[in-house]
Amino acid sequence: GEAKAAAAPAAPPAKPSVPLVDDGAVAPDIDSVFVFALIWAVGGCTDAKGRKVFDHVMREVLAGKVPEGLELYIPAEHLTLLSDPVPGDAGSVIFDYCLDKETKKWQLWTSTISEADRTISPGASFSSIIVPTNDSARYTFLLDNSLRHDYPVLFCGPTGTGKSVYIQRHLRGLDKDTITPTVIGFSARTTANMTQEQVDGRLDKRRKGIYGPPPGRKAYFFVDDLNMPAREVYGAQPPVEILRQYQDYKGWFGRDNTFRSIVDIQFLTAMGPAGGGRNMVTDRYLRHFNLVGIAEVADSTLQGIFETILSWYLLDGGFSQGVQAMVPKVVGATLGIYNACLDGLLPTPSKSHYTFNLRDLAR
Image (cartoon, rainbow, N blue to C red):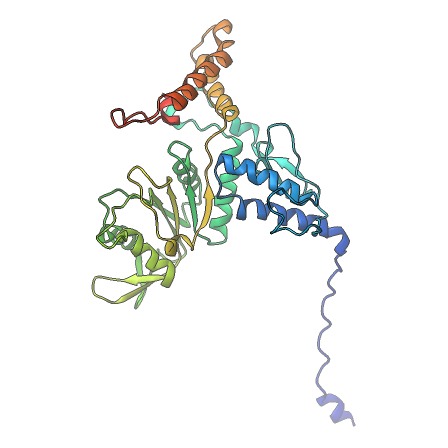
């Protein structure tokens, strides 16, 4: 009996107890996260006008109503969420709010910007000044999350809205010991061979048939002006097609017709809307990306940006208080002229150069 008892298998260790979660307590938080994800997954690809429409529809649906014209798509009685409604302050849209990580309450994106980031240091060069806004806060957040979860991201918006600045500034701030960022600028003359050489030149051979950055590092390739390459006779853009081959098969064929698997790299891209030398990019490539529409900057945001810069310049230059007090009026008048040019000086065949953007205003 003693021998049998000694040979008996030991009882398995008791599993650690997992605290039970109160579904009723976490349901509002989960609904809030769902709403935030829905805003940017579905409405994040719209422009400024589209965001106002999306804002109206979303608020109607979240309130249990059926927006006019959508009766065929939304049932009269549909599920209502337990989360707090997104605030609707005057002039704001749901894209202006984010969730506080700790409290799961809605807050303005501008409230996530620290005072240190808002301050321009004395003696700073004009070209290095970046005034944080709600746009920079939300786009940087979306970009950072895409990088953390290895999901390709595409920023699309008009010229002068800061697409490239957001991405390049964020890449420069990453850990240089583990990240290797590379910028690839496309133009009408870019070829597939040039694109492949720029990527392959940054990779090492890990083992037979497998290439990547040095071990322990990750390579980020930022492709700017993605839709600039010219189309070939069959309508394809060869530089885009070589990039699509990587997204489809996680590698591409080298010049020796041998397939090269590529690991530990990720692509980020930016482009302007099609037209004016920019081409439509194939959906076979775009389907891999999280598309984020970079909307034109609102006048109130522009007012704040240029007031901050001009106030810093006048203060740094020792101008009198009377001159510094004129900053809001000077910026407001300049914005008025800029908007008048946009509305009244439209491009024509004889004046095709009449295209104005924020770079003209910054000058």
